[in-house]
Image (tube, rainbow, N blue to C red):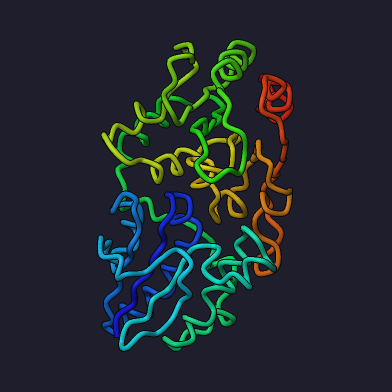
Length: 292
């Protein structure tokens, strides 16, 4: 038997199910069953699950193909809408992914009910990623830190608007905070307390996992439920060392919190606003670290 995970969508879609993929990969590795993953993103996105090998072979699949055993290959759709019945009931949530993985997991002899849901929540083993420069930077910058995920969204979960003015104003009025910015933008002033994460990480390529590492060392995470914001949604940031999340999105509060039935209520503070203009400045300022 072989297991082939597949997902035709974006980086965040691969991250959100990584805990479930990891658990199935553990079973496969113990049984000597090879695992592949077809997706159109960076092959390194799941480098911390080394038993799962990235493939460019789509096997003739399509986004809505349901998970199924075909011959001796188990195909597992990791997209929210891989099982439309479950998606219609649970939407864009961890609960949806959990239930979508349950039946395929049973084929491998794995009962997800036997595993605490929190252990299946996304988490990243940063030992597999290039965090050396980030560690050095964090050691040299001990002030309060805030991560702003300012990249545009690709899946329509919020309005794309420029964060440049917002960042410039916040940096000026909160000069006791270091602001870590996920995406370069010519409109962002190079203030002494504004840092682009790519310049901190310095890996020269795909760095959303490394951005998640930086998020672990920030008190507040701001964004549009996409990109670096999505990669900051981890067990550590929701429960073990909880952060404040400020989301600008048209998603419901429940979809933004993302988990309900199969994990404890997050310890993180999650604030949701559906605005797309400079009124975000005041809404963000309410949740920033206080001046010493």
